[in-house]
Image (cartoon, rainbow, N blue to C red):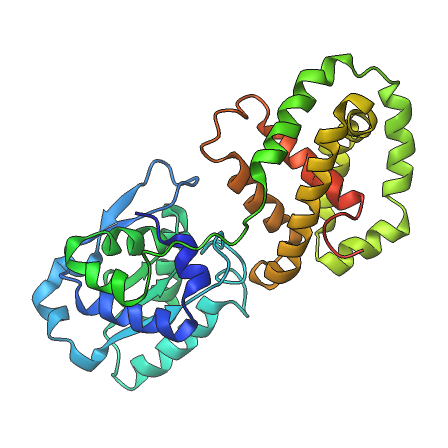
Length: 322
């Protein structure tokens, strides 16, 4: 079972710390660390390092240090710079703490639980970084990400923790009329061949409008990166904006147009409430895209248009701060 979203939204930092401590107390040293999909060269998992010396770590007592790092962002990753990769990252802060404990002979094993995604590449890089900088045996360092937490919580032996922390009650952070927007997108794809304006002329006009200073201010207010705006919105979606406008203004699509604006209104309200759970605004685009597309057979061959419609809503100031 996937508890990712519920752990992000429905439990506090303190509760995640309690959950992590309880899970740590139930490790037997032979667990498999699971990884998220990534450019890890086919590395899907590995046996926990403690399995090499189970008797020793089971008697490590107070030298077995456990840390918990909770995030309210369900798509956050251990590969994010905020977590690892610069001097102000979470891991950099942890390394300094580990050094101090190691100097006092108060640490032998270090386990960090996080509800972030954890890839095989991140595993190799982060554990080596901690080991080399804090002088701790790499086999005594473990990062347990959301994939392994989901795996542990799915065990019958941990069902009591699922109940204790109300993890069965799945929370959906974005409850909006996704069926309506799916209908709009499918209709748009169907009518697309019939839309025949001079696209190049319109794109040049749109490009002038959308690179105007007011869009720079909008992006700054919404914390949308310049790179994403240039590459994804202007570079990829812009060529479709004129087609969307024609589609929505076609009298035969009046009902679909109403659905489109209803969905945009709902999304904007949800984004206003949940904005602090995400870092850059592009993370919201990705999250909403996944909510709409995952498991949807009706959108087969049309999924790319979901992102385009979201970008169009943003440019038209229907979602995000104006």
